[in-house]
Structures are given as C-alpha cells and as structure tokens.
Image (tube, rainbow, N blue to C red):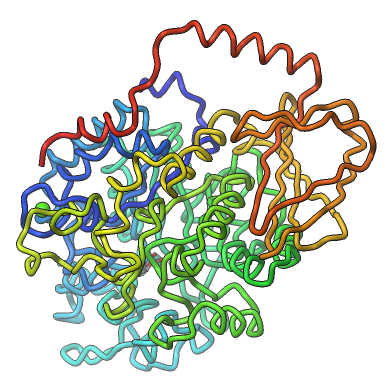
Length: 580
Ligand code: BGC
Ligand code: CA
C-alpha cells in the first residue's frame, strides 16, 4: 500500500483487532502461537473486516507480565518466530491493505533487561541512573499502587546495593528514569527501529507514569508531555503518517493534554466510557453514557479517541466512582475470583450472560460511536474465560478455530499447550468456534462482520459528529451521526423490555429512514415527531435519505449489480488459509 496515496489521518477510519501472538495460532505444534500462525490467518481477519492489527508485546521477555516486561527491545521472543517471520507477517498484512500497530513499553523494563542487571549490581554501574533509586521508601508517598492485589508498595529493596528502586507495576518491572537523557535517547532509538521496519503505529504503554515528582501523584506530569512532544516531532520528521496511541487510564480532562495541540498523540483510549457502557446495559438506562459523553471535551481535529469494550487486561474500574464500582462488581463479578486489582477479569460474552441480544447491542454501541473501535480477539465468536487461571490469563486463552484438537489452535499434545483452551459446556471450543459460525448468517461472527461492513461503508462513523437525542424514555439511547454528506440515526434499546420512543426529527421532515442491515425503507418522516418501537436490547441503524439522494443511490446500486467482481465467500477464504 503506497503510503503517500493514503490520508495521513488514516487512523480515523480503521477498525482495530487486538491480538496476543501466543494465543492466536500455533504453526509448528509447540503449543505456543507464533507469527507464521498469525500470517496464515490474515485472510480470516481481512474478511472479518478489521483494517488494523494491534499486536501485544512480542519481543524477548521472561513473560512475567506477558511481554510487557521487556528484556530486549529489538529481538522477537524466540517461540513467536524470527525477525524474518515478523517481516513476512508485516508484508502480508500490508498487502491486504491492513495496518500494523505494535507496542512501545516506555515506562519500565523487565528486571532481567541487561540495563537493570547491570544497574542493580553496583552503584557505580553506568546503567545505575537508568532507573529510579532511593534510600527510603517514603518518597512519592502520594502515588497509588496500580497492581494492588500483588504489590504493596511502588518501592522494592535491592539488597546488593542497599537501595530501593521505583516501579509502578510489578516489582519485577523497574521504572526507567526519564530524567536521564540517555534513557530518552534509548527509547527514541527503539521507536525509530520499529518505524523503520514499517510498522504503522505504536501503542505507547502506561504513558502517565514516565516521571516522578515529590508532592504530586506522579501521573501526567508536564515533563511527560514535553518528552512525548519531542518524540512526536521526531516521528513526524522522519516517519510522517505514522500513528502514536496513548494508553493513559485517566479522566477525559487528564487525557486531553496528551493530544496537545495536535502535536502529541494522534490517538488515546477513552477509558471512562467503557465501564459506563456496562453500567448502562445493566441498568437499562442511557444516563451513565450520556453523562460521560457530556464530560468528554472536544479534541483537536487531527486526533481520535480509541474505544473498546474488552481487552487483554481486567475490565478496569479505576475511572468510575466508588458507588459505580460497587455496582459493577455486584452485577458482573459475583464470584470473587472474577475480580482483579480494581477490575473484572472476564470476557464480553460471559459478562453479557451469553445473551446474544446484549452482545450485539454492545457492538451496536461500539461501532456507531465516534472514535476508532477496537475488538479483542475471540470476542467476535463469543469466547468465554477461565477464572481458574492466574492474573489476566483467563482472558488470553487459545483462539477457538474449530472443534478439532485444541480448538484448531495447535496440533500439539494438549498437555504441551501454553495454557488450556476453554473447555466448558457453554463456551468450550467444541461449541464456540470460527468454523461453526462461518456458514450461519446470524452467528455472532457474521452479525459483527455485517456491522463492520456497514460502518466501513461510510466515513461518517469515524469522522462525523455525534448529536444526542433526548427522548423522555431513558431506556432508549438515540443519536445522530452526521457529516456534511451523510446522516445516520441510531437507536439502542438498553432495556430487557420492548420500548416505544418518540423522537423529535423535525429537522429531517421529508427524509426517508433506510434500515442499514436489511436495506428496508421506513415510512417517510412527515411530522416533527417520529415514533419507534424497539424490541428488548434491539437496535436500529437508519440512514436518513432525501428523496433525490435515494434515487441517486438506487442508480448506483443498479450500476453495481452489473459489475462482475463478487468477493469470494468467507468460508472459501478460510479454507484457502496457508496450511499449518
Ligand atoms: C498493559 C498491561 C501491563 C501494564 C504494565 C498496561 O497498561 O495493558 O497489560 O500489565 O501496562 O506494562
Ligand atoms: Ca508455535
């Protein structure tokens, strides 16, 4: 894909799919997913309709935090394949018109990284100052402990050199010292290395925590913004058109500065929105979503929110009030094993009690909201989780491709798998798998695929404005997505009952609503108030067309019918997958 031909803000129009290499597809039968395995599944992803792949960390690591504990920024973890395997994957992904986003772990390394091994060995080590040391654990007292289930303090004692070192995450992940210019240089080198290889974007891990300063909570400090602006400037100079995504689990007000004046990050996750989608569907009421949208400030034109339902971590509840957190824990994590740190370690389908209507509705919200949606591998087929596995491993189990051995993930002896696949009666790979769903038009996979197709048929969803409608019935969440040339009305019934709602559509008198899944026309909007009835957890996506526009579109459709190039069937593409 020649980069020059594509707009530099391509990240506004993509759909991201998040992948742990380890869990996706094992090509050589050693029980661990790898790059050749993933490359063999690119046609599956292409046909799901996603347009960018976000890979979880894959460079060398002791894997005590699944690769976020980096031992080597430049080499691939051997079980995942070789650098050639990675480059081949990159080329094949680009050939299919998809983008690749990889991880940039700035804040910390593994304690097995040679820098730390040297730093901890002697106070005179040339790398001593790469990390943050102290004689007392009393410094930076106002800083919260993030992994509070496993870590009691952000300081850990290093007996050999008799000082404490600073870490915001696990004690085996010492924080780098960004006051040290050499550390900054090293990380800039890492950035350039991966961009030079051709990745399209970097997801910058844990950015709020780069600097520490006494008397603050050591988050979002001005120095962090200065460093990120410098990084951005260097990227723009040498690699224009590449993207930086901030992982800053903060309020929208605190995330805003990470966009700068369009001169810091291109994208940032909207963390606080996510739990509120789960509150809204549990309460059957739109108000918690409306509330957070109203608190979300406008962002610079060139920037974009990244939005998501689930990811590889626990469903974090840091960005909700104590009351809301208790509510979410009560509803979604009755079993204490489902809780982790300040969050819930479960997948989407089990969170929705495997109710298809609710799962589809959550995707209806995600895929019609402003921002770029991120899907988590396996959630497209409704995979379950395993609370018996430690940490967050229960949501990182092998992808379920078929009902064959190990769910089609690997030919290995089942006892050799890095972790067992889901095997229970409801979510086990014998039942929930890609092969089972591919031929059924109404399977979770195919409904999501259709939603993706519709979303991708118009730039409106990634770029248009959102205007909330305010019907009295708060069980219904309705809004317009609008651009200069297109307008779509979206209605979501968050409740478990049939609801009726009256919308003020006076602005659209004379328009015809066209339902986007079926192409069916609704009665023309003639009066100011339009009445809808929606089934429990139902949703409508309606394009509002003026009569002339409608005629124009029909002509285009008729012309398209005569064009011969029909896309190959989904199953056909799956079977074409490279063997192994
Ligand atoms: C990642 C986690 C990881 C942590 C420490 C997070 O933001 O998403 O999976 O454990 O950073 O690197
Ligand atoms: Ca393998």
